[in-house]
Each structure stands twice: as structure tokens, then as C-alpha cells.
Length: 384
Ligand SMILES: [Mg+2]
Image 1 (tube, rainbow, N blue to C red):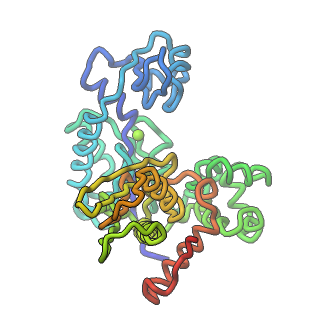
Image 2 (cartoon, helix red, strand yellow):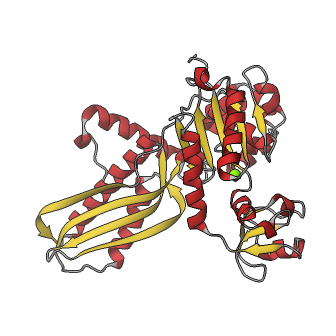
Image 3 (cartoon, rainbow, N blue to C red):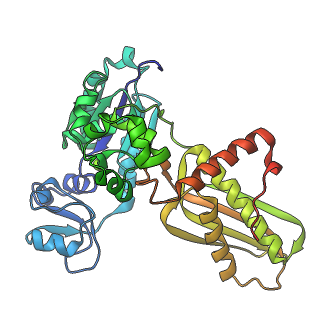
């Protein structure tokens, strides 16, 4: 058992819509939809609480929203403004503790274990933070207070909007027992169906089951689910990830057009990047290929993936697709590099089973560990 921690999860209420209502008094108290117009293809990214009363929710097609709420106001998003606002809010959070992990434009975890002397107990601190955000930014936040990240995130969602919810070691299992399994991190459609087919609907159902019985349903994934359903989560609040991009490049001793050598180099880069992503517990959405020809002409090509990944094979496949599209032919290449940007926190990936096969992910982690022990040359992946 580690020492007792206190984690806050801060989540802004209806973030985009609240910013627009703050800045435009004429939108206040009205159903407001941020996203595509109701006569267009596209979706609503956020809507005000007034719109939610009509059954509108984020990610809903705008046409549906228009039907449900014909008198609603529809405006396009102003992403630059929202990211500027996001930076201001993170500054407010950082004025209370440096241990802030931003997880999306309007959400962050704070480890407040060590600042009690400064700000009072975690609930008092959460109140202060809410007040400060309202005072400085004119917006409401909901905050969950709990001994770990998983519980804090659940807590912030329980009494939205303008909520403040405490979950403790003492009441955690009871609170979790009534919540659906879909609220467990990593449980997406596939895992949910596996569980529901076996009669698991709530976290309480999982709590009542032995780890061994759960293993027969979920294999190695069982332990993770069992721990979370019981309110156990050891993950630390990771301070703002320094990495804005992770890249790997290589200049050849002699300029080359040897396809097999170029592909092997791309594979080495993909492995290198995937390893760093796993180390940082990040997944990437965007793959960037960089090529420098013998005449020093340099190009970069990028591709955004439908799903974030930390898997070398997926990264390699995308990079090769970019490379092939360049039709480099007989041109000699001096440098080849791969980069990735546009990260998401891997722990927020919706479903472990949906993305990469679990086996491959475990293999990759094992290879990383061996490499760390034996050095890079110990294991080489064959690509032909
Ligand atoms: Mg939010």
C-alpha cells in the first residue's frame, strides 16, 4: 500500500458553450449548440445545459439536434478561442499546485496530497479552485475529490454542473457498485459485450466476482477491470508531458535508393517511436514522414489516423504508405525520419481490445523491457 493520496479531477461544464454564453449575453439561458448548422452534415461538439433538456448531447448529428430543438441557436466553434481559454484555466490550476496533468482541453488531474498545509483539506481546496475559476474566467467547473485518478474522474461527473463530489476509501465500493461497467476506463463496446454476455452489468457485479472467474471472461485484462471496479488505481498524476512531438531520424553515410534499406530504417524509427510512446504512456494520432534528397530538398508528409495508436506496426504501415506515395524511385535519399504529434493519454483510449490486439501490445512491452536490459541490438524485427 502506498501512502494516502488526494487527487482532484477538474472538468469544465459544457466548456465551449459556456465560453460563448459568457461572451455573448444574448446566448445566455438559451439552448446553444456549438458545431455544424442544423441543415448541414456534421455534429454538435458541445451544447449548453439548456439544450440538453431537449435531449441534445455532444457528438449528436446537427440535423438531429435541429429536429429536437428547433428554436435553438447554432454557431460554429472557435477553436483558437477555446484553446486560449484552456491555457488560462490551466494557469489558475497551476497556481494551486505544480502537479497538474492536463488530459484534454477542459480537464485536468491535480495531485494535492502535499499542499494541504497551504490550502486546507482537499474539499476546501476544491471549493477555492471553483471560486477562483469563476472569478478569473467567469466559468463553472465540476470537481471530483478522491484517493485516486479513476475515482476522481468518476466523481467530477456525478453532480454536474457546478458539482463538487467527494469519494473516499470508505464509501468508494458502495458508490461504484451502482455504476455501469461502461464507466470503467478501457471498457468500450467489445469488452462491454463480453462482460454483459456473462451477466456483468454494474461494477457491483464485478466486485462480487473473484479475479479468477473474471479471468475466464477477459484473460489478462481481468485484473485491470477488477481493480478499477473495486476503486483501486495506482496511476500517478503525470506532470504536463514535455513532449510536443516524438521523432526519430537517420542520415545515411551514403545517399541511397535501396528500397529494402529505406524500409528497414522506417521500421527502426517506428519501433523507436512506439517505445517512447509506451514509455510516456501516450498514443499518437499523426504520423509525419520526413525525407531529404541528395540535393538537400526536404519534404514532410503527414497522415492523421482514425484511432490513436502506440503500435509500431500501425505506425510503420502509415509511414510506408506516405513513403510509397512519394514515388521516390531512383532518387537518392540522404535522410529519412519519422515523427509523431497530436498525442492523447493512452489511459483514455476507450477500449484496449478495440485497438491493438492485446497480445501484440504485451509482446511490445516485453520487447521494450528486454531492450532496456540488453541494448537495442538484442532483438530485431524482420520486416520481409
Ligand atoms: Mg467538460
